[in-house]
Each structure stands twice: as C-alpha cells, then as structure tokens.
Image 1 (tube, rainbow, N blue to C red):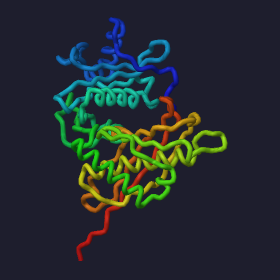
Image 2 (tube, helix red, strand yellow):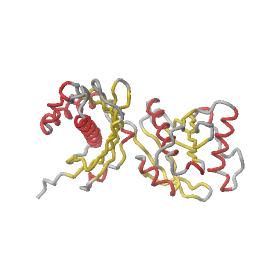
Image 3 (tube, rainbow, N blue to C red):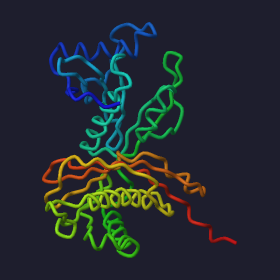
Length: 307
C-alpha cells in the first residue's frame, strides 16, 4: 500500500505535541497491559532522538525513539503505530528515519527488542535475530540487530573499491563502455557514476537502459563489499528487479546504495547455502531523485575444491 502523500516526519516540540507523542506510546505499548500513564517513559528521554509521523492536519500516525548505548551502537525503542495507520507503511517510515539519524551520528549498528509478533516486520527491514530478551508484561521478546556500517578500515575500503573496479573491468565489459566509476565508499554507502556522453539517448538525457545497468551494478557492488567485509565468497547474480523512472537524467548522475537498504542474511553462505538479499538503489541528478531500483540478488556458494 502506498504511503499517504500528506504524512510528515517531525520532532515533537510543543507541549501539545509531546503530550500526543507520549499518549500514543502509552495507548499502544502500555494501556493494553493495564500499565499506568507515565510507564511509557524512562530515564533516557532527554538524551534520546524522538520522531513523530503526522498527517497534514497534525493527526498522529506513529512514533519512535533512538538513543545511544555507546559510541558505536544505538537502540530503537518505543515504536508505536496508531490503529488507523496500521498497514500503510507508518512503522517503516519512522524506522527508516531513525536509522538515517543513527548513520548521521556515526553509529555502526542498531539494536532493538522485538515482540515475537513484530519479528517478521523487522526482518523485512534488515534486522537479524541474535538472542533472547527479557519478557515484558509476560510477552516474549527477542534481541535484533542491524549493521549500519561494514567492518573494515579506510585502507580496506580503498582496496575493496580497487578490487571491485577490476572485477567489473574483467567480467562485465558493459561497465567499460558505460565508463562506470566508483566515486566513494565509506562502509555506510557505495556511490557510483558514469558520464552522460556514452550513455545518451536522442532526447539528450541518459538512456533508460544505462540507468538500469548503473543501478544494477551499484547494488551488485554493495553486495560485493558485504561479502568482502564478512570474508565470504560466492557467485553474485541478479534474480529479478524493478525500477521506477521518476524524472530524466540530464547530466552525470550519482547512484547511491546504502547498507541500511540491504536486507537479507549472508552468513549461511559460510555453510555452503545459497543466500538472497533485497537491495534498494537511488539514482540522483543535480540532487534530484531520478530513479529508484529494487533488486533481488542471489549469491551461490562456490563449489568446494576438496575431493
């Protein structure tokens, strides 16, 4: 279901906004278990980053909070969606914004305690079940984690960029004709580009096929970086994909793929199992969002050399 266009993400500021913010927390997360008002707050409220999602009339749709556990790890808490907003993408919208704030703060991973009924939702958002959490009001919870930045040094990232560029050069000739190049990789995001001239169409904008290929290879490249960071190997293939062309690309684009937009556990590859990952890639031109690509990639384990 499409997210309503009039929804807006804001931080609570006025007394009325704070009251509505905490009231929704209480209604969704505490009242059903006969907990009193005030139980929806803790000692970290003043240190945390709070978000609320409202419509154009100020009606509250969802809330969520981020706080730091240490210099590298943040925790998502108090995710609550109003009954009238369920199934419309409100939870995903709040969670995504909190994740972006965590990246802005330079955090490397996020942690949360999820009710068993919410585990499926968080898995779809790229979180992995890593352990059991203490039950709350008799409800079982599990600890889930999402990595925001790949493990590695700046020197590792430079080396992996060089290796990725060489892999493209040797195995994907199209990348040379397009003049595809890597413009940056910092563990959080891979950025690629290609000049307009070799990819131009009769309208003097970038050929749609070139945009698709750029996005495909950038997503493929982020998957490659994840395998490098995890010390894994396998044959990467694109299983299927969709792309939305939103506006013409009239100058050299920048194609961006963030690690937080990659969902799917790669670790079973170490046990010789095929793995899958869903990856979102954005295509930008002059700071405008021009195309969105969502690819489903598969990594096939390499045959064992043992006899």
